[in-house]
Structures are given as structure tokens and as C-alpha cells.
Length: 169
Image 1 (cartoon, rainbow, N blue to C red):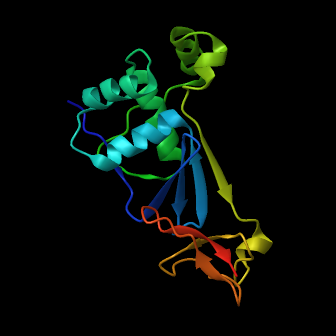
Image 2 (cartoon, one colour):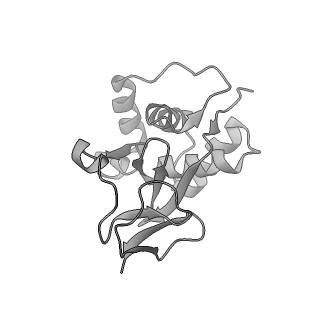
């Protein structure tokens, strides 16, 4: 049995249109995980599953064929985004050739593209990162972490699961 990495502590999670939005307050980055990688992130966060258990649950959730390659690609993406706390040695990363092979195995390119793990990471531009406060509609952390909302705005509509909200009057 190969041990699995753990999700790095201090990350805030929010579901968004079938995807998972992760806010990393330490790096002030937002990561948008595709459904496949989002499921892997959640299963790792829950803990208590073996690698084989995650592969099986992922296949069930995605209504797809069991594939260790899908799990490995998701883990590679989560590592690249620095969302994992590895206590186990990483398996060798899968090459782009293996990604193409995986697409062929999973099915037609249109359907398979929805399953292939990917993460979009958003980082503040240098000028924005130096801002002392967030403008109306900006992402904020309800517990007061990160950059505060500009006066007289406050962090509103805070999600009880993630702690994320938006700056509102």
C-alpha cells in the first residue's frame, strides 16, 4: 500500500459550479480545481482511505472507469499548486505523452477533457498585491485574515464552510 499525501493545513475550500475553489491565505492565491482534482482534494482532506479506495471512489463520483492514472495526475497538479503536505515520497510525475494516452483510454476527447485533472491558479498582480485593502466585490476572509476590505466596506456573505466572503457596504 502506497501512502498518500495530506492536504496542507490552512486552506479554505468553496464549491463553485461543480468545481472547487481553494484560497491559500499564506500565498494569497486562489486555485480553481476541476471536478476530478476537486474530488481528489476532498477525499484526501477527509482521510481514512487507501490509494485504491480513492481510485474506486473517484471512478464512482466521476462515472468513469477506475484509473490510478487519474489519481496520479490529480496529485501531480495538487503538488504543483503547493496544496499538499507530502509525508510520502512522490511517485514520478506522468509525462504529457501519458496524458494523451489517458485521454484515448478514457474516451472521446470532448468527454475526456472534462475528466483530465487541471488547476487554474490566480495570483494578484504586483500592484494589486500591494493594495492595503480590498474594493467592493473583492474576496475577503471573514475571520479577518488576509487583506481587509476598504473602509467603509465589510466582509459580507461569509460561507460558513470556507470562511470566504466578499467586501460589501
